[in-house]
Length: 341
Image (cartoon, rainbow, N blue to C red; front, side, top):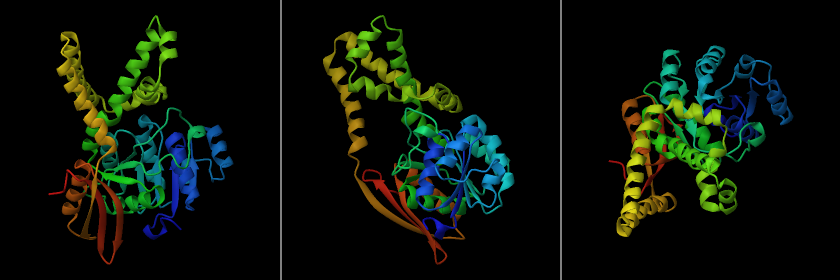
């Protein structure tokens, strides 16, 4: 059974919307013993129709499980984590899939479960929400951030191995604050810009004509504006300071483009667009090198933690994590331009 070697054969998913439902269906298809739960009775009925066990209470769903994925809306995570932690034993690994990490990491530490809670964020989604939009392949091969802490490396190792095995995830280890800083520009600010563009069209006197002419550039640039507004608002407010800081940087670049356009300076305009083109090209054409490292499983946690976080900040990801013979071995892929020191 996939994941059994790492002691995570019995799983539960709390909150079965788009991401939680996709996690649930993939775990089911991988052959794990998985239970689901959702606060909405109709959603629980729909999950049962998918052939997954769904008890009536969250406590029943998570009791006796080896790993629990908390997948509800961001504002509900602290309360959900408290309920799940109280109903599970100390060997159960807890994680979440929220798009903001620093706050929930602090909450977990305050609740006394920092040693077994690993903040997580799979970088995937869709412009629809709910279980009806969930697909078992949605997260396949996704970059999946995990935030290892100084007291939770054992839980991190087990969870990382499971995600690689079941989801073929590219596990990106980062600190929670570094995640929030990077996600602001990689994910959260694009939601603001997509909303601004789509909202401006909505207000335009030529709205219908614009929509008739809209092609790939408009569709690609506004895709995430099709998501649930409440979900996007929760994400932006949860990472407000970082989003505002990165929006200020975007404004600087936009002002440079605007200034060049106003001045009729074709060279300056082309230079700025060339910068943008280079970033876009790097998204598709990044070369990687393989890197392997081994640490004692029961010592040198500071060195192991530093190594893991360096992988994430260097733009790398893990493709393997195995504990055997008293040692933990990692296999990582790093951008060719950013080798580890």
